[in-house]
Length: 301
Image (cartoon, rainbow, N blue to C red; front, side, top):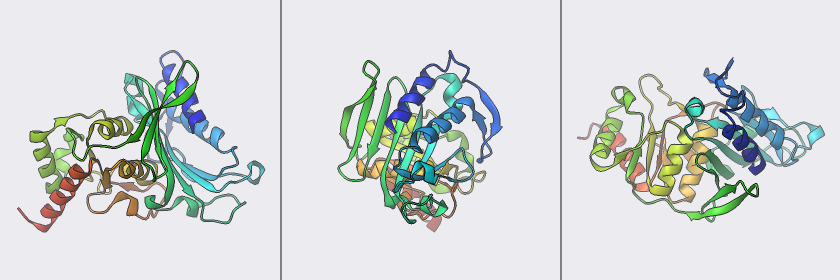
């Protein structure tokens, strides 16, 4: 993962000079226009990871089906799910973007190519998860679920990630809230009430790149929300590639993540590209949103 991050970071930093800006001219399985860097990052991830002998199958937000590792490349015991370039709509305006990844242990027999069954595991069963943010510096944050979350900054002088943020613990309540308020009229009453309260107590910060918003709130304290609405009734974010890995990190750092009703890590996925609402960040802020949603659903003033 560190090698893939270095390669992608190099391309991101040369994006204005090389021919990797703009649309690739294709639409991914999500029905979204692919950016050239989306395609490049996706291929880098697969090429770097699939030949390690440690992974049996990969699945990406950009691919319709899982990609099993062939017997030629020695299928390993792990499963890698990833969003190769989160926030790609921000590429052309030079805003921070990132890579998100989730690692599970396979459930099918060792030594064989992995299958969809290996991919469809709930977030609580992850063995590691992380993200890379390509911003003013390139930072890799990961957790194995035990011993907290840790951040490593890429030192361009030596080409290595060095420990810069050991034992990240997010504040119990933060000063930021991050949400696309242009969707306000399409939310349920519980989310509207929660945001009304946050507007009076917190500072609004919304980049529109999940990794960037999550990273700031993880370090400084705060909450990110992407609720379901009348336009996206099942939510917008992907459970396996975005919500579950970031929820794993959030909990390891003392935070929380929910779909508004259930913990993200307890949701059993039914399909590869399943979408979900997401409320994630400081534990007390997430609990407040969950209570607001529950009260509104029960008709409690």
